[in-house]
Length: 331
Ligand SMILES: Nc1ncnc2c1ncn2[C@@H]1O[C@H](COP(=O)(O)OP(=O)(O)OP(=O)(O)O)[C@@H](O)[C@H]1O
Image 1: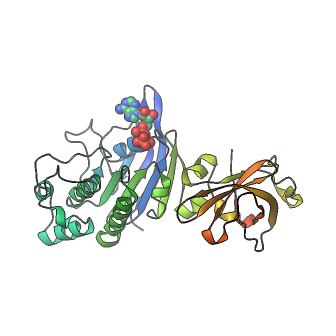
Image 2: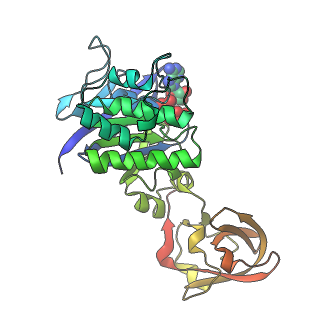
Image 3: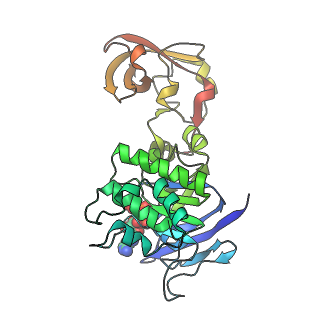
C-alpha cells in the first residue's frame, strides 16, 4: 500500500502543558481512518496541525513525503492536496449553492456532477445558502471541499448535530467518496459508535495521547483499558473481587481484570464455559434489542437480548459466557 500521510511525534503545548503529545501514525492511500476520543482529548488540535492550520511545537507531518508547513511558515495556512472541513464551517450568505461551489470548483462539469450526485445535493444547487437544513449544509460544505480535487480529505466531527437519518446519509456519502473517487479520508469523532461501521482503521485518544490503534472490530473486542472499552460501548467489568463470579471455581486462572461485552453474556445457554444464576432486575428498550440487568450476588451484569428471548423482570435466569469472548485490560 502507498503511504500518503506520515504523522511523526506531533506535540502542541498550551501554557506549557501538552494538549497533543507525541502522536504518530501512518495513513495509506485509500484508507478510511477515524480518530475518536472524549471531548477535550486533543482531536481537533491534532487535525489542525496535520493540515497546516496550527503550528506544532515539535514533530512533523509528511504528506506524500513532503513536510506540511505550519501557519508561521507561509502566508495562507493549509496545504494543497489536503482538504480540511472544520467542525465550525460556514457557507457564504446570499449566494446560491451553485455559486458557492463554483468558487472552489476545479473539476469538469461531468466530474462536478458526480460529486453532487455522491453528496446528494443535485436538487439543492439553485437554493440560497440560508435556505438549507443542517444536514444539507453539511453535504454542501463537504462537496465544496471535494470539488477542490483533494487527495486527502480531513473532517472534524462530520456527524455532530445530525439526526440518525442524516448521519446515515453522510456515512453513505463518505463511503462513496473512498469507493468511487478513491480519496483517502481521515476524520475525528467524539462518538466512536458513529465510526465503527465506516472506518477501516480506528485510533483512540486520551489527554492528547494516542493510546490504541487497530481495526474497529479489534479495538471493540480487545480494548486496552476501561476508557477504550467505554468509548466503544457498554461492558461488564469482571475482577477477582467480583462477587458475581467468586462461585466459579473455574475462574481460578483469573489473574487480572477483564471485560465482557453485554452481547457475550448470554441468557440462552449454549455451550458457555462459565454460568452464574441471577435475577432480572431491569430491562431497557434500545430499539433493535434490549439491555437486561441481571443481579448476581449483589452485582449487576448487563446482557443484550432480542425481543424473542426476553426474560420477565424478577425471573431467575442463568447467564453464561465463554473465555474466548473476554478481553483482559490494563488498569
Ligand atoms: N484556542 C484554545 N485556547 C485555549 N484552550 C484550547 C484552545 N484550543 C484547544 N484548547 C484546549 O486544548 C484541549 C484539546 O482541545 P481540542 O479542541 O483539540 O479537543 P477535542 O478532542 O477536539 O475536543 P472536542 O471533541 O470537544 O472538539 C482542551 O483541553 C481545550 O480546552
